[in-house]
Image (cartoon, rainbow, N blue to C red):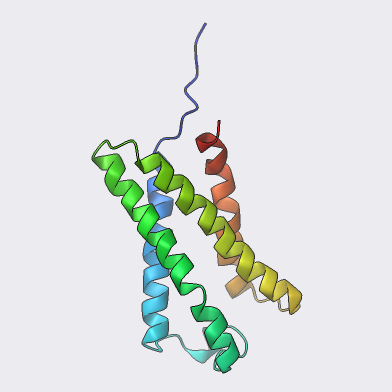
Length: 134
């Protein structure tokens, strides 16, 4: 009888972590430096309440980046702790996307430029999380 190994591996997940974690860092750097043109920003981009709402994601998104990039590093060092950090990163990534989508849904604002990336943040972890939970 052949046993199929369903344990998580870094494989494709590494690339998701790299793209998303570096994108979070770049996004907040660009936001801090006001490099995002207003026409590409979310509605009411300059409203102080929405500026605060946007920055409220900063700690969460930085924890996501730190845990994801640390998981890659620990995997490379063959440290089993990579799995815990990867799972934390995946769950928090889902939560970050969910929070943003929930906000825009409550406001009935549908801008694909902001919806698609946040839906991706919600959906992609769902393909990996079950491999970490058994």
